[in-house]
Picture: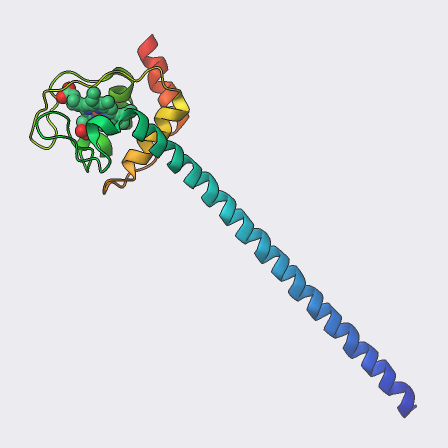
Length: 157
Ligand code: HEC
């Protein structure tokens, strides 16, 4: 009886150990999946950031400069201005229509004029504005293509 009992105990112990290892493995797989998910999110965020930067470099940098400082008396800065951080519709409108009205930006006005960028896609305008709103010391909610589309449509009416 004693000798029968020992193998049964060993068997029971062994199956316990297997169960524990399976649990551990499952845990690791899940952890791995979560990390993968996080990485995917980061990739799509940084892809939009990269797109925004590319559009900024192509269309905006000549006037507003790589660091968003603008050019004194000519082009206003994009660093923590009320237009960049403020109302999204107004900001989208400036990029769609350009501006030539002598906007007062941080107490100063600028003599150059900004051309309209209505030929850019909703996604492109969203990407460049999200980039501007989270760069040059700015911290504001991103802008979506849907929001750009809505402003564009409201102006077409
Ligand atoms: C040819 C030069 C030029 C280009 C190119 C240009 N801007 Fe401007 N931008 C200006 C000027 C000048 C003003 C001010 C216009 C006014 O006073 O009416 C301005 C105003 C602005 C403003 C509002 C004021 C502020 O500084 O917060 C924003 C935001 C802005 N531009 C973003 C952009 C973005 C984004 C692009 C690229 C898609 C761009 N601009 C391209 C010249 C330019």
